[in-house]
Length: 304
Image (cartoon, rainbow, N blue to C red; front, top):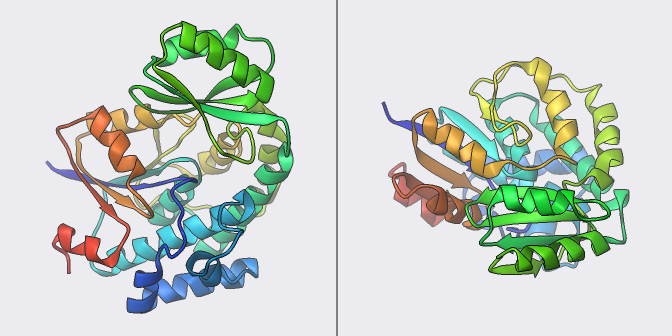
């Protein structure tokens, strides 16, 4: 039997104007942006639609991305599109939470706003992230483990693309060793912190404290967590996994492989860009992959 998954991109896919055509055309999308403003006190619509210097700053990027993803999601749901499971990359996991109805949308917006601030403030200088191309995860992990300082895998995105994170000197040293070990390229990323590293443990602790006061529900549809690359079917695990996710490895390749093994053959990327679509095509060429970034993309889904 055919199965469909909703997947949600993470930080880095944002651009000025994202979501505006949905906002202009659909009342349900406008309601989402209004809810985000109510929850955070930010004019999220202006943040997303108007030229500004904040959109690429983590504490603003995360709420802007999530709001856009949820706005598009609610349009798809209004049109009757359903998923059997869902997942999101890093902050995109909160989009999956919205799809699975694990929390109230306002709570998700408040959490992602705080998450962005906590991550921005946790390690403001001296951190780095580098994409390692053309080398397997086991080799990269071994090199990181044998490099002095704090450096580890942040994202296992797809075959041939893995991101390392940590202290700047340690990341640079590991990258040099990885090139000697056969990496095709090591590309430093323009980021404002060593995300998904042990250096962000304090941010995870702050998020855990905030999560303590949030009501969670059993997922209406299962979502797969970044930390375990496995389905979360009970609300009791949600808070623990979200707190760990801030400093833990995003196991995206394994997450997609798990979905494939469970019979998912159609993936719909919801939100800006085609990053996850690109990853999936490197993981499997035997699936249907769509991305919904613009209103015109709805036509490809035969739901308009």
